Amino acid sequence: MSEVTNAFDTEETRKLVKTFQSANTNIREQIAGTIIGQQDIVDNLLITLYVGGHCLITGMPGTAKTLLVHTLASALGLTFNRIQFTPDLMPTDITGTDMVEEDQSTGKREWRFIEGPVFTNVLLADEINRTPPKTQAALLEAMQEKTVTVRGQIHQLSKPFLVLATQNPIELEGTYPLPEAQLDRFLFNVILDYLTPEEEVAVLERFTKRVDMPEVKACTSSDEIIKFQWLVRQVPISQTVTRYAVDIVRATRPADPLATESIKKYINFGSSIRASMNLVLAAKARALMEGRYHVTPDDVKALAMPILRHRVLPNYYAESDGVTVDDILESMINDLAAPAEAA
Image 1 (cartoon, rainbow, N blue to C red):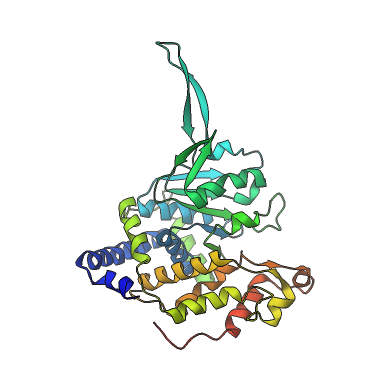
Image 2: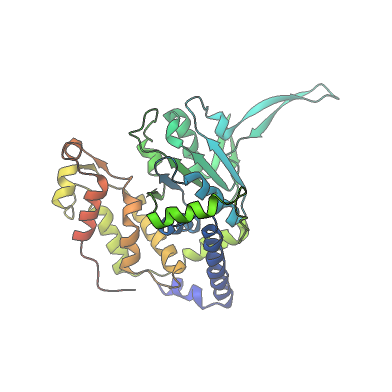
């Protein structure tokens, strides 16, 4: 713990903290110039960036999922690509492919790799659940290893690299549920809900009086973001709070002693240790975004839902009783006592 704490005692780290706070504030302001409301969603996307993870954004059509991701990428000053997922999309449409090219002067033919849209910093996987699992799986290696393998050749992706995928609720016609292995690669599954009446009025005021979109200025760079990701990992967290994060994740497993009655009744499979790791890292990022240099139980509790909701598998009892995953997790999180220590 002392080694991690000492990281904030250096002049270089203190300067980096100031740069982080300034960039974080500016990014929020740039996004707010286009996106009205949804502050919790914006913060979760920023946490995804600072942790180096990926985020799944679930919402009905017309809730500005695509606009939100595009605005964020512009504010970050990173390279950005968008893939519109469709039923006929092929894996090579994402990763790229090798092609044979002929040298006009010598007549010699050779293979050349043509990069796909995955070779970028921010990848918008738009309506990812509109394409079959085979194509969805093309993202797995990129999301986990930050590489793409084509014909046995490994190609490195740029850093930072994050996938921000949007999906419509799976009850809609023409969609494919994401495989469990791919769902587990997403740090968050955030729900983009409808705006309040006041926010909807503000949207109309802003977007029905002008044709062009508000200009979004870049507030940071790829090099700075990589440093921010290092900085987040230096935020101290006590063993007590770490154990609280572990207990929350273990409580999602029906066979664990911490599991509540609702978990035992309605959940088939709980979350793995990847959820614990993501919960701790995300809590560190949240603490730093709020100007603190230590993680509190509130940081962990606030992020538990979007980290866990796509990592538990409900059974048919939950469906027959009309109980949602969020209902089950909310009850479990509230029943699990948080530690008194705030550091």
